[in-house]
Image (cartoon, rainbow, N blue to C red; front, side, top):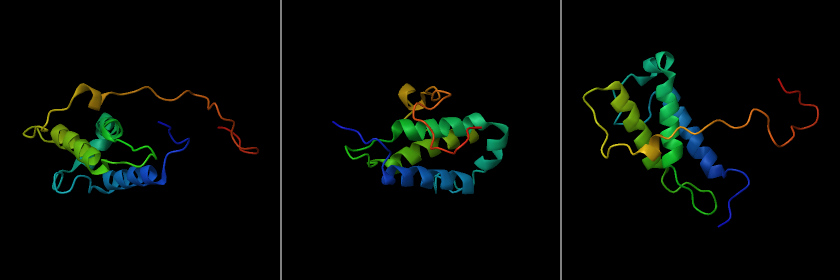
Length: 121
């Protein structure tokens, strides 16, 4: 199996859409309808970190890098947020360890050089 050197436009679209829904408060409709999770984000950013981790860990891509289960990945992230904000809600199925794995960040320096004339901060 070969993998693309860049993420596919479809993956970019899935990530962009997920981010938009998180930011404007409409993620996981109707599961999160009436849940003011955005007010929690400023006080507990780890909730957002885990929601993105779940989205990324659950998302699967085909050989061309096209997401095949983006809606399910969004749903699982929304379930986590609902469970985090609502003590009476439990996600079904329960989250597995691999879904909530927090992987390390990239190296501090890019391996690929930046374009000429661009100054790194």
